[in-house]
Length: 344
Length: 257
Image 1: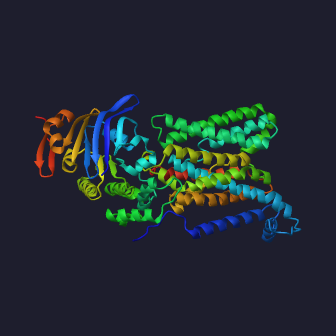
Image 2: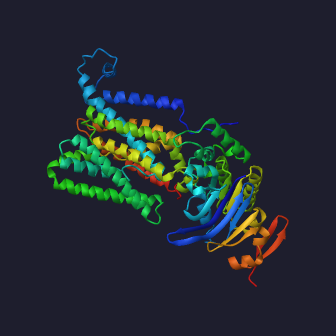
Image 3: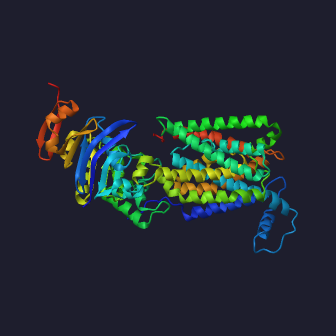
């Protein structure tokens, strides 16, 4: 009996993508205002492994370990998370254009972060992620409720429109708060445009448990995301508890997104660009999309960050600007091709 | 033998009663057909049986209350084929048919070789093996309907509900799908409940017919009892001639006298 191509990712692709991820990470650490030999990068990283003894006496050690590596790792994690969250939203909402940015999650996170920054109860580093998470989840809940309260509640256009409305409302409230707290405007503004620049090991310690946890959860749901693709009614008759499962996936995607943007600021379009680039090559099964988004999302954002700090060096282009410059035209392209395939 | 028994099923959606006090019963190997004019509540009744609409009344499988079943348990007993099944773009026929195993897998589990073998077996049975790697959204209406039936068979539920399985098909494809259903219910002892637009088809294939009008039962019985010129004229306001054929009555529309 012939065995048709199954949905799983082949081991060769797995290995190739992991290797590409590691190579990209090392390259991104090496390239910058001070060019560092790759051997130095590997030496310094190796010296921090638990079983290593010698700390190399390289003058670049501090640049590598304290500046570049945390930044590259944060870009990796945030890129993985945003791409995978985009995947998860597209799957559960059955909407090829769903993205954490478009559904108001990021705007919610932005408002939450702004409130935390201006009210400053001392522990900004604790309250900013907490507030951005809470508001992000609130925003997607409101978007979802609005999108389904109308008669054509199941159409993808209604959902996107309500996401746009919620995002605009939250952004305008955020702007209002920002204007009334002019002394904090610089801090808020740099957060909004994305700030991988100041990334530290503390940022990583704070967000990585959430991001890695959420990535593991979403990876576990990759088969279920395929079941969603036949619509709520048919999925329910196949035995999928639709509402409960969707809620779990959205909570995981929103929690991870909020954790990522709470330290990186708003970075848009990663959740659309990466999964769709993968779809062009690897088909639409989420069993391939989710693992590939985790790996290639990380690579994408590391390279976007590299672009942001090298193109106009010594000046930096905000990372959110770079991803939007790549993402917006790509989004229009997807909009054009999605028309005839999302018939519902 | 398994049987599905529904008593006094009433479905109210947004304050409007769509189905009123309908009772029915179907056992494995049997085919029950629900007919009625547009808006009579056929699809809603079927959706209520599938768990997609919340009915009042009782719904039992072998004296177990279906409404206490979990979504997953219910799917192990009842499969449902929608009138216009969603065909996700880029999903292969094999992947699509494999979705039928959802109820037999825990939420985060992956399919085993057994699930793959079942999907391959059903594809071969239904003569669909050559489509296995094709994308479902590129199939014709008849192929798509057969693939949706294959998915329901892979689900391995003793009861299959089909909403207008032939509505999108021409006469040749219709007969192909109907012959397939007839063979399957006899050979694999499946209980089939379908809604049907075409009264001649309803007369030729199923064992029993339930005729609905405005959500209520007009008559429930064999094709010869239900498909009479009198019932059809009263329920549909249509002038027809009923011709008796060896497989059942043939209903032909004719001009109002």
